[in-house]
Length: 93
Image 1: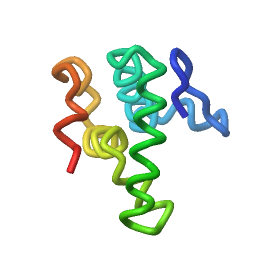
Image 2 (image 1 turned 180 degrees about the vertical axis):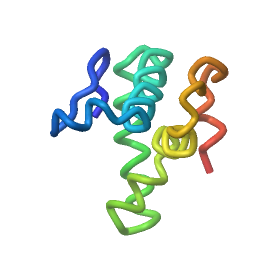
Image 3 (image 1 turned 135 degrees about the vertical axis):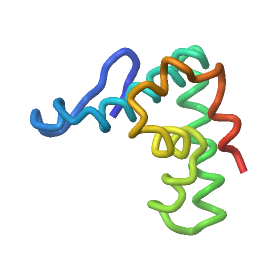
Image 4 (image 1 turned 45 degrees about the vertical axis):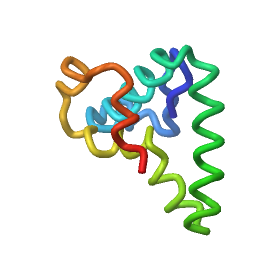
């Protein structure tokens, strides 16, 4: 879980998982560019909209624009070096 400026993991072994850390770093960048608090507000509001649409918590979570961007790019460890500002907007649908 990414809570700016920290990445919190349940298991110390996950701290060495480069893909997981990249996913969470993408969230840290999203949080920073949205000035942190608006990120959390948007995240929660979008989650509830998705929950109404999909009627399934996991599907709602996976379709939040922030999560869609992070999951789509977590394997690209150079992604943050080339990521344009507010790219998560591309993942809204």
